[in-house]
Image (cartoon, rainbow over all chains, first blue to last red; front, side):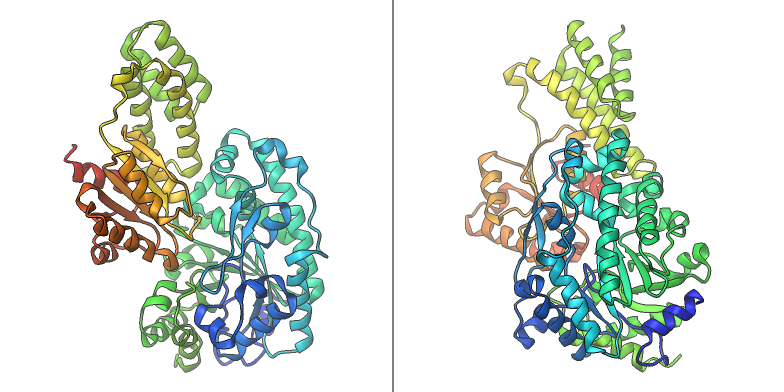
Amino acid sequence: MDRKAKVSEILNKKHAVHPPCICPGGMMNMITTELLNEGGYSFREAHTNGVLMASLAEYAYQQGCFENVGVPFCMTVEAEQFGAEVELGDNTKEPRVVKYCLESFNDVEKLEGFRLEEGRMKATLDAIKRLREEDLDAPVIGNLTGPISVASSIMDPNLFYVGLNKKSEEAHRLMEIVTRELIRFGQAMIDAGADVIMIADPSGTGEIMGPKYFEEYTVKYLNDLIDGMNTENVVTIVHICGKMTPVLKETNHIKSDVLSFDAIVSLKKIREFMGDRLIMGNVSTYAIEGNTSDNVKRLAQNCIKQGMDIVSPACGLGMGSPLKNVRAVLEGVEQCQV
Amino acid sequence: MDKMELFSEISEAVKEMEDEDVEDLCEKSLEEGIDPTETIREGLIKGMSLVSELYETGEYFLPEVLTASFALNAGLDILKPHIKQEETGAQVKVVIGVVEGDTHDIGKNLVKIMCESVGFEVYDLGRDVPLDDFVNVAKEKNCDFICMSTLMTTTMGGMRTVIDKLKEQGIRDQFKVIIGGGPISQKFADEIGADGYSVDAAAAVKKMKELKGIA
């Protein structure tokens, strides 16, 4: 199937009158404090229990936030399975890694493979299965943390980033192991019924890595990950945060069906490098958190007018974003007259 | 070897991120009886300021800056034990950290490195730092600056809390408070009564020098 046709068929389950408007999950999830409290959910429990995870994802969708369901709601599931210590947070704070598990590159071979039948990995896969069985009129999105972001969550990022330069053999070995395991988790999501695999790799952004390492590590392992899964019938999206302007050429080498950008990058600039590739983005999350709902609507409509293929928040939503503003993204898209 | 030539080789080795060369050259400076404080200032720190320049112009990125700072520290480890006690009192002292609830510390680490590259003494509290720690360490170490960073909107409020704590204790004027991070703006800095905001690591150091009246 043609890539555009595939994306349009999978993402436009409901209707094709306007571009799809999604908030995939993972680091870019649609869950906010207000939503949790209105629905009576405990975020902590939803991170660990597949039934609640699925229920919360569906609740957010039913509340008029975006045209998809997506799990999990954080980017710590993979790091935790590798052995990093995670604090799950509460209804106002997202989970975060509090202790790394690799002291140095010497420990790389000690990493054990993901146990897909245990812990939050199992919960995530269970949630995808349940959402699939619900047969909603919205795509089910499985979210993976990108290879660089996982690697720099299991090892002190300072050591990791220095290693890219000084210990490239060991750094590549670490990236191979991380990517190999991510492929297993991603394939399991597809097998469980995910329509879309979203990979977010904020720590691999060109703004941090610079063009050389962005190509050598970020692009390489994102592509290995995409190539390693059977993605014939699923849409793949890659999101990278930050100022990507210095690495737009290299970004175009990423093989995902869709690329998602931060609000800092203008679509005009993106098109210069990417032509008619499918681009997703980029309603400012600061506006969603702190501006009026009318302005959020206008920003969403601007995305469409400028030719965005899929409308979404530019990055992870702040937990304190008002529900009214979160809903305004989709409302703006639905009301848009192009 | 001429002293100046040695300094310039050290600077170059820091810039080129060659930690072993930096170590060898620093050892050599000691063998030749060169004052270690001068080697630090004219060799290591000069090298690190070359690195900041390359970062500002977009030739170096975080991996290069971090690797160079490792080389700088390798040199400092060799030279510092040879400095006489009374000379170690750094002119500007900084306490820095990522506020409680947030673990994004790349920006903070860059500011720390840039501060060290101009010779400031930095107390790094790390990330996810309890708000009281900023106040306590600043008092204990008699710091000039309290630097706080966050990438998340949810944790921005912690910066205001720290400033309020300083006010409650009647010591607000003893410290300059500098804040930064993705969601932070000059407007927010004004709102919470911070002394400065900076958009990136290089600007942070400029701002601090400006506030201290250092050229």
